[in-house]
Image (cartoon, rainbow, N blue to C red; front, top):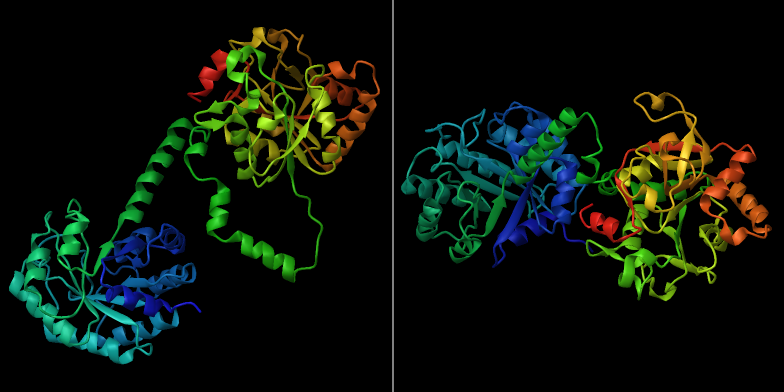
Amino acid sequence: MSVKKTTQFKQMLQSDRLEFLLEAHNGLSAKIVEESGHAGIWGSGLGISAALGVRDNNEASWTQVLEVVEFMSDATTIPLLLDADTGYGNFNNVCRLVKKLEQRNVAAVCLEDKLFPKTNSFLGEQQPLADMDEFCGKIKAAKDTQQDPDFCVVARVEAFIAGWGLNETLKRAEAYARSGADAVLIHSKISKPDQILAFMQAWNEPCPVVIVPTMYYVTPTSVFEEAKISMVIWANHLVRASISAMQDIAKKIYVERSLLTVEDAIVPVREVFRLQDAETLKNAEDAYLPSRQTEHGRAIVLAASKGADLGSLTDDKPKAMLPIQGKPLLQRLTDHFHAVEIHDILVVGGYKAETITISDVKVEVNADWEQTKELSSLYTAVDYLNRPVVVSYGDIVFKNYILRRLLNEPGDIVVSVDANVIRTHAQTRFTDFVRCSRRSDTDYFEESVQLLEMNPLLPSNQADGEWIGLVKFSAEGARRVQTALQELHGRDHFNTLRMNDLFEHLIRQGHEIRVVYTNGHWLDIDDLEILSEAMEF
């Protein structure tokens, strides 16, 4: 049986070790706080108001704050302490607030002894404080209102912030503790913990002490532990981190007028879906909606070759298992597929196939890899061509957006083509040059592009691009390829056929092959020079 959030928070306050809360300002950031390992959340008034685009001066109404907090509470299983400023009014407003927080499974509320509307503690000097006796009444009203005995009220003492000394801070903290506060939060905005440590030396009450070291952040945590502080709040760091990240990405997109250089610097959309718990909805749809047949994508990776031009590096492993920045090339490919929710992956090996030890992949072996070309390897996986599938060479590295664009392009057979045919190594290796129905330009998105020819003998100055070794087949496209492979397999020279021969055969039969253009952002690991490039890719 799970422990109530209120009980969790009360246990944290009463723990004999230092506990920590991290700021969150909406449901998404609250979930991130929990996943990071933190045991509790600080529902920051500054963070919530900033996320709403208003000032931290009670410009967001208490009901608007409550709505945000409800999403935060629903998204998490750990306790949340709401920064409720001054309580949004007098004792009566505090009573209603506590009722609503308990209804939303919020563990605790923090009230500060300043005037409504509040002013952020780091703005200005000599901020006026609430009458001490009136604030004690708010604390008593909150405690008398709560229904859950473990719901906690934290009284935030702003005397240091307002320019008062230790005596006023102690007097207020003692009064708030006697009025029923479950903890006192002692706030300071100087760059050293001197005020906090002086308070702790003079503090004789059993009431726990909470601090917010935003300004004295260089202080080692051990200092807080030695001072017997109960809880530390990291008060605004996620909202500040999100602002800097969004500013950087927004400026980059504006300057470059493109997403190419930012896509790999931000989380994939699937991570957003995961944080939204999209999988639970999918399972619920399976349980509660009428059943419907779905087709799950799969991938075939052709990785039979040794890589003769890579010298002794492939003496004990196939080219696809060469490490690129510490990770096997084949693992990088499977990571790309996993990123687009393709988990059914078949690798067709050949040379040293027993060294293919990538987890969560199946391995078939083209035993005749030395006497055959890649079409024989694909034929080894012919039974796998019975549903939507992506086929990839096993020796390519690429930016993930290339795969996502390929998958998003409609069509039964779609190939990814690099429009930049001026490649330094293009004339020293087998190159799948292509002619298309139109060249890549700024307007080609307006209509589909068809593959007209794939021919390694095509002069590069007559080519519209180069096939990079990625192709997508729909269920119907995979069926056509199965049929084509069976037809080609009956020919005497089948062992000499390559993938371009398959595409040429399909084109002659009248099948449309669509093209998705890219412009660089991939490498074909054929020799030591390109391998060196890949290390910096």
